[in-house]
Length: 208
Image 1 (spheres, helix red, strand yellow):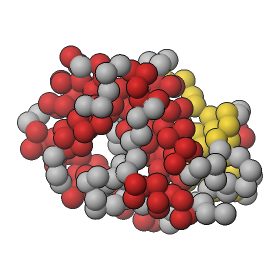
Image 2 (cartoon, rainbow, N blue to C red; image 1 turned 60 degrees about the vertical axis):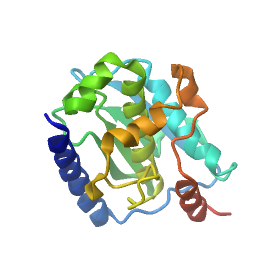
Image 3 (tube, rainbow, N blue to C red; image 1 turned 180 degrees about the horizontal axis):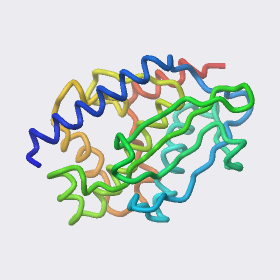
Image 4 (tube, rainbow, N blue to C red; image 1 turned 90 degrees about the vertical axis):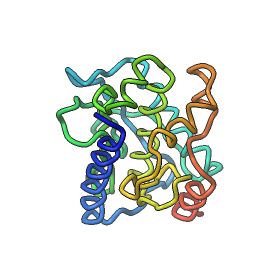
């Protein structure tokens, strides 16, 4: 797949997701006290790696850190979690998707991540020879979809993690901007994927 075709595919996927999210009317999670979360094992054929759990946890920590303590994530059992992360195969829909769910009368969110980057055309081929690019793509997808879980909509600002690919732009550059800050995998835990505007919008939602 050529890069032009990849951008078109990503735009169509993002457009479908955006339309679905408008119907769901995003709103903040109940952040009274703590937000319980659950990270599942990968489904068969999903290309899930056990180390992908770290990427999801680091993504949660990135959002948590940006609020200065206004929200706090804690692990729990699946049926008690307000935020649930699932790793699904490439034929299971969008590369990343968030669906609102009800958990004991509270708004929750199920996040679906497709860790098989080989389906992403040229950028997927680059990730085959650059493990940190693969980690970047999966990590930033986690951050983006967890942003939706927390109640954030898409933006038109290319600098934001909540940027909507339907607006176009240099998609490989979007990922390379983050990848260029890494020298080893562990750097992901300390290098934020958020823009100042992403953090400001989250803080506005969860201001105490």
